[in-house]
Length: 477
Image 1 (tube, rainbow, N blue to C red):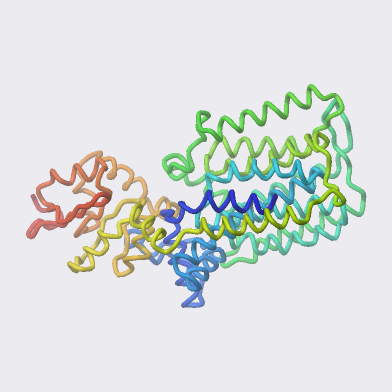
Image 2: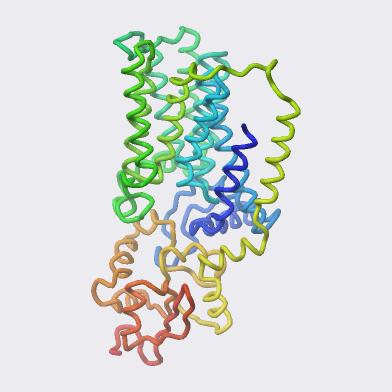
């Protein structure tokens, strides 16, 4: 089953190499690797004026760059395959343990895979959601096997806080389990089971140590509060950037989310002997809110829902029996899975082609060959690649939307990119000498009509404009 999940995951991610944010994560990892220093101010943009920056994913970024050092593009793809597969298989282990049925657990793994497809890319969030599954597994083992498992939580959070901001949700999950550990009641199908005194004491100690562990980070309390700032303080980010927008209910994942909630509700009502626990209801409610509010977080719902669904269906299929195992058949299937994974792994030429299809590779070559100088204006989605491939030119904007919102650059770029008003106002304000833009965008079409700018390059993806000689900022075209 794990072999089958590996094949499914690798086939899913093999064409997802070039994520626009991958590049600035890669560059940040390189900076940390070479300088042995974690930057706490912006290093890549001239518009932010070296504004303070929170390196909340620095450890993941170092791992990403380490993969690149070992194998170049192939190393990055291997990183994605390994961590994406680990995420899905960890979901399988969690669901199998939580349901007590390894066969039904496979269904839970498929649910995790399906919702995770929205987030699988060479980005730290893959590690963050993997660690969420590890946390849930430690909590389950601490409850059902030995409280000593709970002492792994502080170590987990000390790592997690430096990998991805999802650690904050992990703290909330820990708080939910701690609160529910005191409850003991049964109202219809809704049940709460009080933990034993030893289990509860161990959980509270582990929770306290975990809360302290998250301060083991480069910037202290600002990094701990960064997730709160993202959700409630970065209004432009969560309303304008596509992955932060609400999940459309017409999206397959939106339909699946509603279907799973309906199934859980109807199953609990129809099966009188079935029970649903208070902590499950609370976690499902939080996961549903996050998933519907921000499409990138629907994976959180998938992880939490998979646990509940598999536990409810635990008795619908007989459990694993070692005496009925088929070692030879299993060995053949595992070997076949390995062969498929190796065969499906994309070669370097394929990876380079993916980059060229999604990033301004040829435009960067033109800029270097023609020695364009001065401040550069670039599109939001190209910024990450330019940070990596064109480090001699500081970018105007890139996928690190947080620092651009803090400095007031993001709303200016949003208005400019949609050609609202005179484009020259922003270009003159930042003394822009040339623009590298996505070809089929409103602002690219608008630039062709401006008298003070000359188009010097165009390909299927990008277009470059340079300021005409004599058309200095604030002068008439």
